[in-house]
Image 1 (cartoon, rainbow, N blue to C red):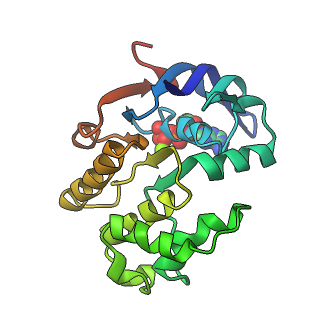
Image 2 (image 1 turned 180 degrees about the vertical axis):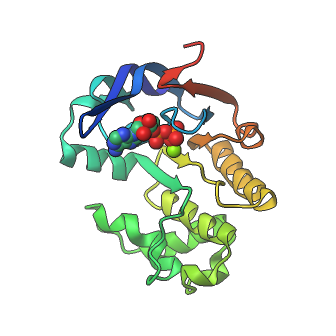
Length: 223
Ligand SMILES: Nc1ncnc2c1ncn2[C@@H]1O[C@H](COP(=O)(O)OP(=O)(O)O)[C@@H](O)[C@H]1O
Ligand SMILES: [Mg+2]
């Protein structure tokens, strides 16, 4: 079953009097339960594509069907609702709040969800257990290694039970051993049913995925 379907997606940016065609005509599908890598050189449009897939940005034209819903026509409120319910995010720079504890960082996405839950702290501890950081719950991010910070971000991405986890260069700041630890965690999550998309320019990282999409100058190669 399809989780993601992009049809003839275009994204233009206008900065001053310069117009950039960041995505030119991108069509692709991602099946539910897939582990997909997106590779491409710097500037090829990977982050632009991930931001659209993650409902953080909208296409200039084209259609995006996520989970059977046409999200390309949604307004900001509808998009953030879909985002909070369906998608977990992992970024190259971790994006942790430095004055908050690991536990508070993991709980952050739950602040935006309406459903009242009494067991949220237990749930967050469970997510920290999954990434092997239960004993660091009360640490601050600066007291963690880079790999531990990224594992915190993965726990945070999991807290709302998303169908999809999207990771933009998740290992870009990490040494190769730590990078493979992170990729092994993502592999395990995929085996448990999460759909995962990882952007990378590193073939060793892409090798963890079941399939790879290559993007060049805003176009999918061979697509
Ligand atoms: N907000 C923006 N405003 C103007 N141009 C942008 C913006 N975001 C990205 N671009 C341009 O779009 C192209 C693709 O960028 P990006 O998606 O970040 O590439 P990648 O992640 O593959 O390095 C680049 O030429 C970049 O300069
Ligand atoms: Mg990028």
